[in-house]
Image (cartoon, rainbow, N blue to C red; front, side, top):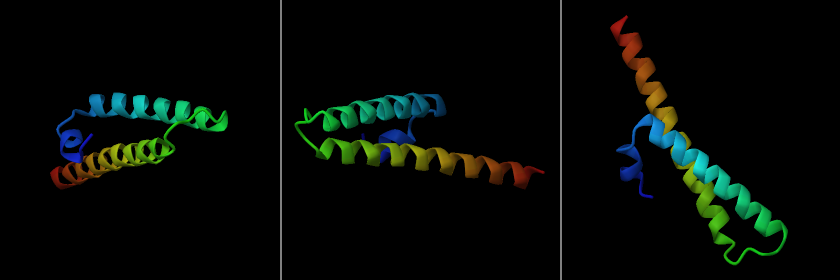
Length: 72
């Protein structure tokens, strides 16, 4: 998923996407451990996806804190 598409998501949608991606990453790691993983690059892609989502969540958290501080 592209970062622009993720930015258009709501907080709840991002949280669900993160949970799905983490679950997928877990399954990929299990497949890798049992030597059934066909494409090892999928693990790297999943890790990057998790990092992107967490970065967006942190950006939103910081923006909300700035707004709250400016309003006070």
